[in-house]
Each structure stands twice: as structure tokens, then as C-alpha cells.
Image 1: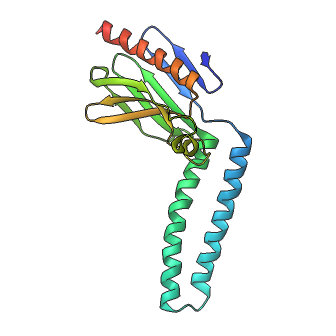
Image 2 (image 1 turned 180 degrees about the vertical axis):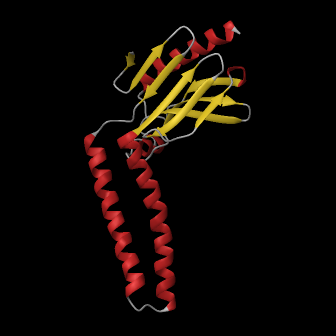
Length: 186
């Protein structure tokens, strides 16, 4: 097994290339996200208790229901981001069949296969330094900061979450080289 930086490992065999990308391993990100998520769950529990216990009029019940819908949406999003930071991985496999991509949280996730003949215009994507997008993507609760993308039929497929420029460039070269090798063998 070889490595590109701290987060990317790969095994390059004659017939296939297997890549594993781990999320950033920053303890303070996980700690802050865990504390924030715990507080958010506590707020939701208190609001649910208040809704079921207190004698509220119709308008107050409506306000609490709307708040709980908002609360549930963010509980889902932040919970998913926290699980990604703790147990998430991206798996990429390139072989004669195609490029297989899986975003996994503790082994759960859906694999998608993309046939090599239909992959077009693979490129690296980086936001401009000090732009709003760069600052936004640097936040620990943001999951979608993919650095490599390609066009597949009519969709844009992105992967390689939050890699730095050096890691993403080396990974991009490795992937494009293997895709070219596989296409020549067909």
C-alpha cells in the first residue's frame, strides 16, 4: 500500500487501482461537532417535551412544530457530517469495467460504477483563495468540498473531499494515468 499525503492510500495492481480517502482527522473538529450536536439534540428534546407537556394555544403549537421541522433538518445534516468525520471514507476502484465510487460511513453507502468510455473532461476544482467559497468549504460541518470532478453522460460527478491542492493533483494524475491504461487495454 502506498500513500499520497496522510489521508490518501492506494494499491496499484496491473488490472486495477484501489484508492481509499479518509476525512480530515482533526480532534478539535470532532470535539466541537460532537458538543454542538449534543446541545442541538438537547434543544430538540426540550422543545418536544414542551410541546407534549405544556398547555399551548394553537399559534404556539404551530410555532413549535415549525421550529421542530427546522431542528430536525439540521439535526440530520449535522449528524451526518459528524458521522462522516468519525467513520467516513471514500473508496475508488478503477479496472476494466469502469470507475467505481463509494462514499461510505462505517461500510454503509452506495457504490456507483462509471464506464470509462463515458468519462469526459476530468479536472481538479479549487475555490479561489480567501473567497467566500473557500472559507465556507473549510468549515468542519461542510461535507461537499470535492476536489476532482468529471463529466459522465449529462452529469457532473465529484469526489475527493477536502483534499489540499498537492494531494488532489497527485491523485488526479494517478487516476487519469490508470484510466488511460485501462482504455488502451480494451
